[in-house]
Structure formats: structure tokens, C-alpha cells
Length: 467
Length: 103
Image 1: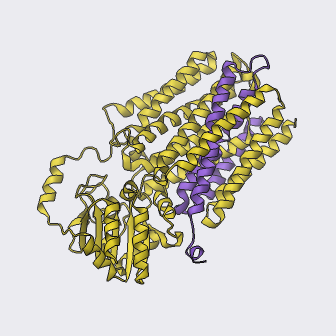
Image 2: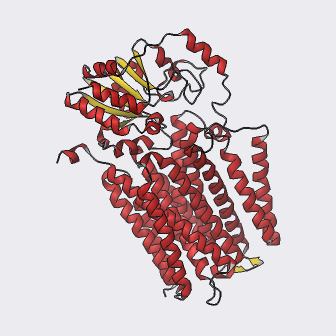
Image 3: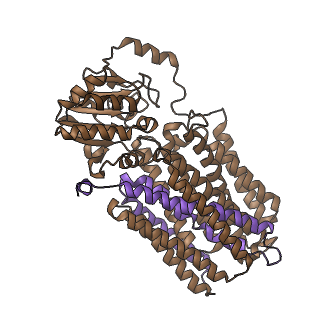
């Protein structure tokens, strides 16, 4: 048994350890140590909670059993999950945080005495507001993350689902929640509390269905942020410093990531949230363009020849590489090139893939040293001095139209200056436009050679031809 | 006049947002995926609330409506804590420098 004051100090320590855990991520060297500090913070928080309650009855045995069950499931998932499935995993984890927040809020509502919040039907006003906000945000996080998970997993189509009056409906539902919370404070009615949660679930679904597949980096970051705010709401209810600090950290972290992702697409946060991007391009338009312009296409042999005679190659990976699981084959190809004294670097656009840093993780998995991988602003000037750009699974992020055509939907988006290379190899399954629904001018340039194939198969073929 | 303790918690909250802001901007972009998985793990410190709820049942009735929600929340949060930290660790192990592999 420890006093409430001592417990509060330990919670503060655990909050500080979480700050240090995030601080560690400023460099890969310190990141592992940071993760250990985070684990230490978590252990302190849990042990202190046990000690401050001081209830060592049979309940505690059950708590530990449930803790171990959850832990075993979590550990199993963590070891089994392939790196390409990381975006789904993170979305799934967000949904669990959201649901846990909802359940803790419900438990507190049903048994406020256990949390020192008053009695049933007579909960302190501030606590009631805090727990309903925590529950509402948690519920939105939960159902929104489930939709994001289904879209990323491909169970649900990644295409935006829109209907008229959608945004007005969301707005009305949002306002309705505020009215309900106000009403809840006056009546303390259990039914109103349940309604708040159910409507929040609904908002979460409605909020995410109009957002298309390639906007997922923003969605995941946004849900990350929400899960933080939900935790903070519960933290206020429980008067727990560790939870308040963590909620604020996670909330701002997710918000910053969303901002970075939006900026990398040159779109406002509002336009991403409203969704429907890339949905209404007529199919005729695309076909017409395709017929007009000639395209040079080649095979693995041509590609191998070009790269063998180059002195520097820049690789531009994108979501297609993740889908085809081509990162290991790619690494093999790069090893062969390096044996021929060719300088190889990787260029990563901030929104390549389906979540922030997606490509970096996949390349790290394939044992690519992280000091060969560069961000957009660090490498963009090097394209002009390089011989070959090898674009594998990326599309819109290389489209020069973003710099030249003010009418294009992606105009102003920072893109990789791939076309400045002496020659461009573009691995792609077909000429179909990318997510933004616009044609990539790069396909028709004289110095572009299209390699029509699955990314993994093409890379493997090139490896064979490099011998 | 006495200051409501809520104000102190609000102060902690707002200062933490500022800390979060500066700390997260210093995270290198290549580690943004581990950042998301570790924030996921730490936000599961919400398990603290779940434990309080679960332990609130009396010894005669360990499982009442309130504590059952607590127990489920423990499982959910525990999946996140173990899954989040372990998968972050797994990812971070993969980030290697060029010189490491020549050794």
C-alpha cells in the first residue's frame, strides 16, 4: 500500500519515461534504448496501480490472468506480423486503445465510487463531462480504425464511399453529441450515456468511409492522434498524471504526423477529411489520352543493361513495392549493382506507402542500411546528376505535372524530380493512372523506359540479367 | 482562494502537448512508423483505469457489470502494450548502419 501522493509521483516518473521513449526516436542509434525506457515507464505505472489499490484478493489473480492472456495475444501478433502489414496492424491497435477507453469510461460511469467520482446518479459534473468526452473520442477512434483496418487489409474497397448530405449528417451528429452530453450532465441518465457512445461509433464509421486508400497515411496519423486525446480524457477522469501526459504526447504526435502527411500531398487537412478524392474521374478521359501518346517499353534485359552501364542509380520505392513484397529482391539487385561499383541510393517521398515511414521500415527489413535512404528534400537535387532512376511501385509522387500544370489536382505537391535523371526505369503493371486518377507525364518522356510487370518478378528478372 | 486541482491537471496536460510538439518534430522521418507503434503502446497506459475498475468488485462478486468492462479493457490494453512495444522493438532492430554489416 502506498499513499496517493507517492503514487502520483511514480505516475509522473512513468510519464517522463514515455517522453524519453519518444525522444529516443530522434535517431535510430538511440531508439532501442528509448523503447526500453517506454517499457520501464509502463511497468512502473502498472505496479504502482496495484500497490495503490492494495487489494490483493482473488480479484488480483484474475487481473493478472487477463493481463497475461492479452499480453500473449499481443506478443504473438508482434512476432508473426509481416512488415508489409504494418499499416493494418497500427490501425488495429488504435481501435483497441479506443475501445479500451470506451470500456474504462463505462466502468467508471457504472461504478463511480471505485474511482472517487461520487455515486451512481450523482457523479461529479467535471468527471461526467471528462468521461463522456473520453468515451466519445474513444468510440470514434475505435470504429474509425476498424474501417481503416478493413480498407488497408483489402477486405473493404479502398475507394471512397460518398453520398449526398454526408458532411451535413456528420456535422449534425457531432452537434447532437454535444447536446446529449449536456443533457447527460443534467439527468445522469444511463440511457443517454449509451446513446452518446453509439452515436460516436456511427460518426467514426461515417468519418472514414469517404476517405480513399492513398490518403490512409493521414487517416492513420489522425486516428493515432484521436487515441491520444481519448486517453487524455480518461486521464482527467481518473486524475492520473501518467495518462494525461501520455494522452497529450500521443495526441500531439498524431497531429504533427497528419500535418506532415498533408503537407507532403499539398492538401489541406480539411480536404482530406472531407474525402472523395480521386473518385470522380471519368474513364473515357483516361482512355483517350492513352491512345494518343507513344510509350517506350522494355524488358528486364534492357533494364539490366542500362543499370550496368550507369555510375549512379537512385531507387524510388512506393506502395507497389509493398504490395508485391519486392523489397528483398530489390536489395539483391542493389547488391549486384554495388559489386560493379555503381553508387546506389534510395529516395523516399513522405507519403510513399500507406503510413508515415512505411517504405523505411520495409527497406530496413530487407537489410538496407538506413544511411543509404534519403528523404525528398535531401536527395531531390541529386537526380540531375544521376544516370538511372529506378521507380518501383511509386507513381503520383514522381509526376512532373505537379510542377507544371496548375490545373492538375496534384499541382503544388512536392514531387521527386525523377525526370531529371538521364534515364528513368519505371516498373509498373500497366499504364493505368495512380491514385490521384491523373496520367503521369513521365510515362511518355523520351528518356523513360516502362517495364510492365509485377514489381517483384521484374526485379528478380533484372537480377538474373545482371550476371 | 484555493485553486481547483483540475487547473493543475490542465496545466500538466497543456505543457505536455508542448513537450510532445517539440519532441515529435525531432523524430527522424525514417522512424515515423515505429513512432506510431510506440505511441500506440504508451497510450495503453489506460490499463491503469481498467485495473482500478476490475479490482473494484467485492470478494463475493468479483465480476459485476462494472468490473467486467474493466477486465475486458485489461485484455485489450494488454494486447496493445505487449504488441506495441514488441513490434516496435522488432522494427528498431532492423535499422542498421552501413558499417555495422562490414564488421
